Length: 119
Image 1 (spheres, rainbow, N blue to C red):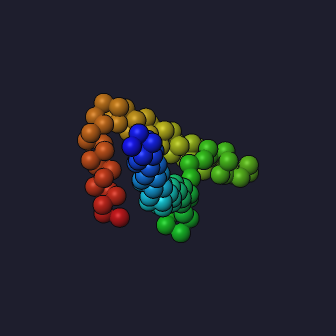
Image 2 (spheres, helix red, strand yellow):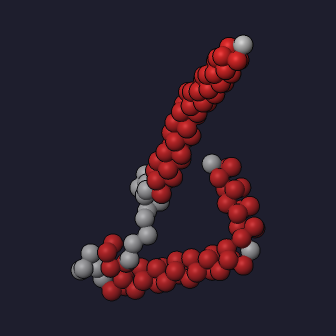
């Protein structure tokens, strides 16, 4: 009887190991597609964010550039002065927005969410 009890204990231990191995395998089989799905989702978000940040000339959005880079060298002084004034105004507005975002981040986030919802 002693030998058969030991054999039964080994068989039961083997069965437990096999069940654990089976459980781990099923978790891995289910987890890999989920992980890949999450990875694809994150990649899609990154691509969409990159596309939205690119300048779109057709819609009138242009990447911010310095006036000297945009205007030709032989630009009349009047246009250059106007362009520099616009650049200065844009910088002031940007600074104001940065200050507002730092002082009232919740309100700025709500405003941006509203804009995104409209698009």
